[in-house]
Length: 352
Ligand code: MRU
Image 1: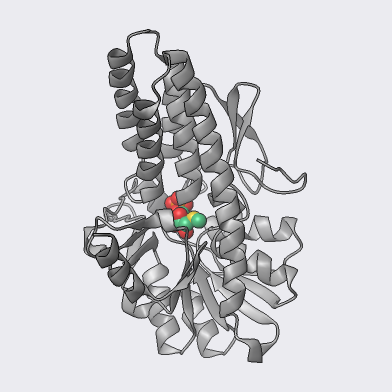
Image 2: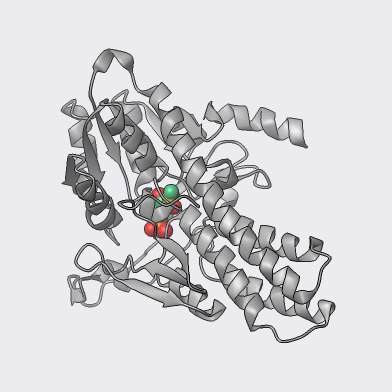
């Protein structure tokens, strides 16, 4: 992978181990966590040291390689059986982002198809993880550049609203939604990014704002509840968000709060785009209602920075994602171009 010195890479392969930017500590602390075992990688994904759909796919791919290194047998059938167990462990980390399952399946397929010795299979697995990572970086750059085609020409410099973090930190680098923002900034088409803070985990306030500040991209953080007001005040020209899984009918799961943003965008005639790689599309799911939605610990709701903020005795509900119906999505910006959600239905028919 061609690494630029001043860019943000959440997952790095270095000297026989994986280095992850600890995203739970940003923006206060920039620290790297060393991962040498598959179980530690599973834990890092679960606890969101690494997060964002494409980034957890890349991390899981390396997790599969680390797991293969731990298997001490020269018997091919036993090796594959143990590797399936590693895959199971990694699959149990986060249920919504399809990229995780896609990357694990690709790694398993690689192992089954490699006809060499066990050592050769292991080498091929490392190469495949590196390929997945390099492909994701190139994909994000292509998404960013295709995103330029949806920027209304009549408006000059644009004010773009985004939700959660779909940036370098959430991918192999560059980002999907923030990839569009980065390309717009490079082409001098961006006035400012509005970043929803994204309760409960604050990925917008903590991560998106941090990424923008690193690159001197003007960014204004707003509380999630302010987005509709900003649209009403004509402060937003375009919304771009990422996705964790897109069903075959174009319904898109993304961070909780995306759905209400899409409703507000439609009410104010603000174009609403989803930016995501093709690998985020799950053609096995007919509609968004089939996308598994992760529910996380209630502590994320009743505490901020480890301090209790809610009345004792209240109960909590903490879904991490919601599904935006295709009818609210203006277009999906992919590495192959911008598609209308209904394109997916025809595409599915074509591949079925
Ligand atoms: O819970 P997270 O932080 O992993 O959720 C991330 C998102 O919802 C992103 O928008 C999505 O994964 C796309 S990342 C390019």
